[in-house]
Amino acid sequence: MSAAGAGTGARGVPRPAVSRAVAVLVLIGAAIFVIARTTGSGWLMVLLSGLVGVLAVSVVLPPLALRRARLEVRAPRDATAGRSLSVTVSVPVRVRNLRARLVEPEGSWFACDGPAEGETIAVPARRSVLREVAVDVTSAWPLGLVRWRRRVHIPLTRPVEVGPAPIDTEMTPPGARGSGADEQSAPGWRDGDVVRGAREYVPGDPVKLVHWPATARTGTLMVKELDAPHRPGVVLVVDLRGGGAAAETAAGRAAGIANAALAAGAPVTMCTAERGGPVGGRVDSPVEVSRRLARAVGGPPAEVAVAAGSAVVRVDACAV
Image (cartoon, rainbow, N blue to C red; front, top):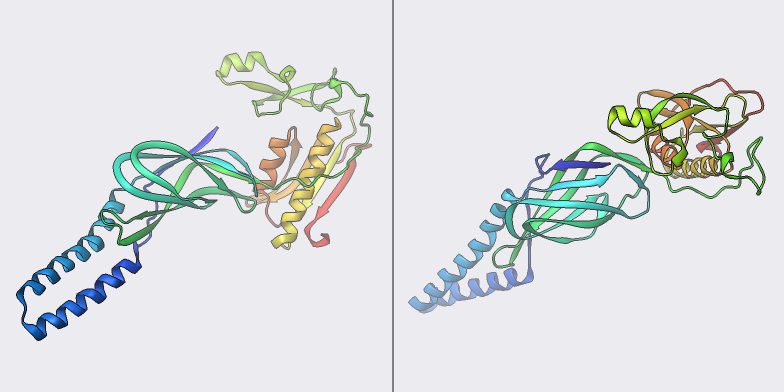
């Protein structure tokens, strides 16, 4: 699973950054000009002309190098706020002496000599759905006196869903087994569960959930979606209205509660609000929990029917 984009998105206006060496050369050039005008020395004017040529080359050529720069970005579909994310950056065209840095999500500077491909580390600052990445590209070619910078926004063909960092929370769901539970207490593969469909495999799904007929038919690894109507579970209602740090803390708590309930063997139904409206549905793995919370926004969460014996847990940003 990856997201990819080419550096053909919105491009910012190149901006120069003048080094101290340029300031010194300008002062020297001004002094030479004054002396040449006073003394009438021809060789000083020749020297001044060469100095002006050096400055002109330093100012004009770096923006031309930036115009040729093309970047492609690939990143995993899933990420966690505040944790490292490995991003692959490709430079498909021949360029030299460029440097680049991911700005959103934040990364470190790396050399861009193409054609080439390499990995860099970025850290998403907050929970979100990344539909584009911002990259700063700089060039001081060929003399290193004036460095120009251009910010490029690269759209992703598949969004990167940045979930919250789970906050560890103790959770004893109704009907969960004690410490002696065997592997069949895991949600979704107890004997007697009803198969309600199939979906793509996500990391963390038990091997016994693999749906071989659907896998053979689609050519993609598929797993069973199961209903456990007689098993009490947890209905997690996540209300992120209010926003800010409180909403991020609430999302982290919700992730911790959901993961703890899943680990204890209870089915979890999560109720949130997304940009398209309220969303309610079962989540079967920590990856699904992270994706749902990455998409969650402030708004009235969905309302769902609660099965007998199930526990309803509310996580409200306004109460954090």
